[in-house]
Image 1 (cartoon, rainbow, N blue to C red):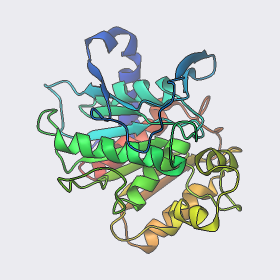
Image 2: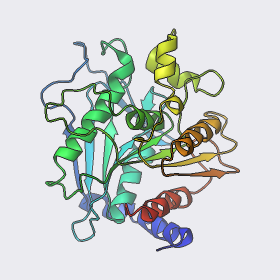
Image 3: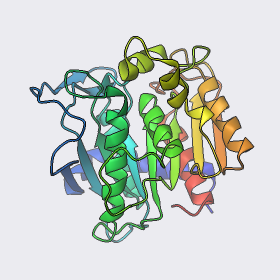
Image 4: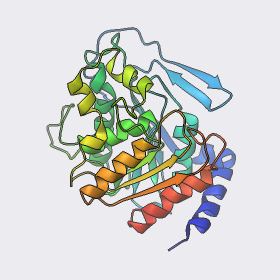
Length: 308
């Protein structure tokens, strides 16, 4: 088994190859709901993508959810797949830094990646804004599992990865997988097989919750039932998927206690879990630690569990 240091070197090489290889990757953008988006109102599509000097690119007002499929090269495909949920506070999506860049790094390691452009909550386009993103992730899990054979994926090795608010979405799918919000006549399992949560929002409780993500998902006046339901540390049980968490101790946007509380709940319910906390590094790891450092920790954990 590779050491974390050796894996970090591999990751650094993978990220260094992006410019040279991106045109050769098997990449497709697919509509998430070919037969119509559920929980939707008739409304103009106002989606826009804007460049951003800090994080490369941002998507706003996403109302037509899509999956961007990055198939692992056939000669190195491991059968593992990861559905990537970019962050952005349920207000925007960091589609490159926390999306396509990560997907390409996974590809170089033989892992198929699916970047989810999930709907951003908005009463203008949704009947119930609180469940829109979760519906989209459930639909993505369902689609990937049902098309696993076609895409050379093991249907029992489909994980989710989420950054910040995308981490909240991923954790919600992992803790509420028995609550079905989409049409699922085949009764396909909506449970992720593992979770990778990167500086995640976990709780919506006042003590540690991220107010911005909470307001964007639930509105200005969420009730106690909603706050309880979407505080994922309160819903861990023995069926919650194995989880890897990474966070910065001095994160001033999403307190590190989000990861602490979730890890503690995982341990209490005997769920396989690991956590890594960096002493330094702002929210989103924009300057530190390096991508190959934190991503290497994720890959090392996946290897330990036989997922890579």
